[in-house]
Length: 196
Ligand code: GTP
Ligand code: MG
Image 1 (cartoon, helix red, strand yellow):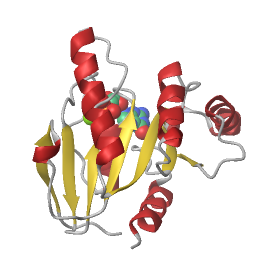
Image 2 (tube, rainbow, N blue to C red):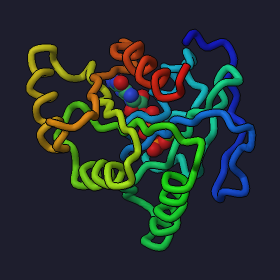
Image 3 (cartoon, rainbow, N blue to C red):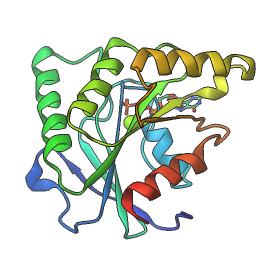
Image 4 (cartoon, rainbow, N blue to C red):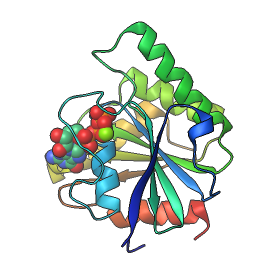
């Protein structure tokens, strides 16, 4: 999809604020700072439409980006915040869970993991949770420009093994917001999920 038009239509904290147009939605989940906003910007060809930050936990609402009057990307706040209180974490958890389990127009979730490391326990829990709820999932390994080409196969195996992707239908795509590696493959997955 060549994207010309995109707008942030809503920053929502509760279902009453979700858009009502009925367009299909793709959720983006992943640890804070993993590169969700950067992936969004790459997919929609903007340098900084979705606010990126070096400060983890900046995104605290469900941000609905309407793309080409066809679909929404929904930036879901990162799990594993370092700096918010337990109470706040619980509140975010409920908001995320409500969205992911009850949203009828949600067609799939892109789960981002840091391509430089083994997935964290939080990453593994999130993945298992998505599988439990039968949510079609794509794993995107981010910041792959920071991983030397000769080491990428090893990282692929490590991520595959840690998350338990072998034998499942879940695909894994190596991605870089800097070089745009993987961009077309991510779009292809999204398009099959939204039926476009
Ligand atoms: P929160 O909104 O805080 O949860 O973070 P986020 O997941 O949206 O991450 P964001 O896109 O803001 O990126 C965090 C940092 O990682 C920024 O400094 C980005 O520039 C950097 N980053 C993201 N993707 C890449 C990538 O593919 N390569 C490199 N080298 N840096 C990246
Ligand atoms: Mg963000």
